[in-house]
Length: 134
Image 1 (cartoon, rainbow, N blue to C red):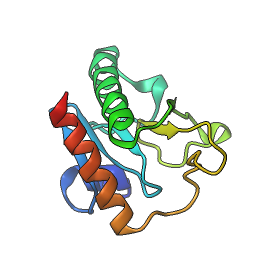
Image 2: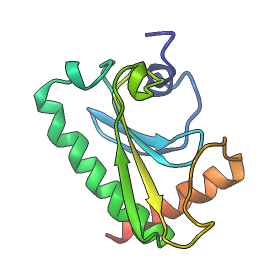
Image 3: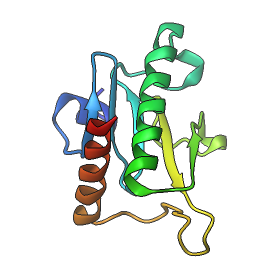
Image 4: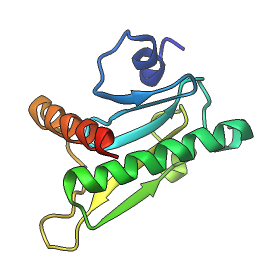
């Protein structure tokens, strides 16, 4: 779908900091610099997600969560997935957010502002390195 930013990223028509991908799933950094697990097929939300995509999505989620923890040294991982505007879904293409979290005040990433290109490249490099270690 030409009006879907995730479809444009998947097609290579929009830039992204891609962490990894396979035939069904792509993982890239959000504008705010946390990983997104995204179906390659344009699936609007969880309600329309084919059951056979559940396993690949969760496999990537686990792999990315482990790598994110190793890469950033975070104390926890927060996973979220929103459906419909009432739940704050703003891109209507199935995706799951993987957020690193810390206990220390001031270190809990809120991810509410667009990150710089340098910050995203640094995060991408750290996650990719952690993926190769495990």
